Image (cartoon, rainbow, N blue to C red; front, side):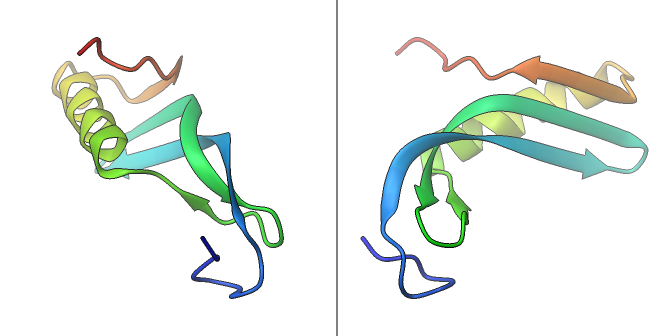
Length: 77
């Protein structure tokens, strides 16, 4: 699959760091499975992982945490 940003690179399986922020909270997830462009480095995260990230981030923010950094862990199916 070609990169939608640079139009030249191919997407390869890899990992990325995703930072989410809302109001005064910043949540960082490291080692998130993603597709990474071999040309420009653009990262693509699939729908299931995105949904999981948003659910976890909302839970963390509801607990009142301002800054949180953690390793991403996929939920067991």
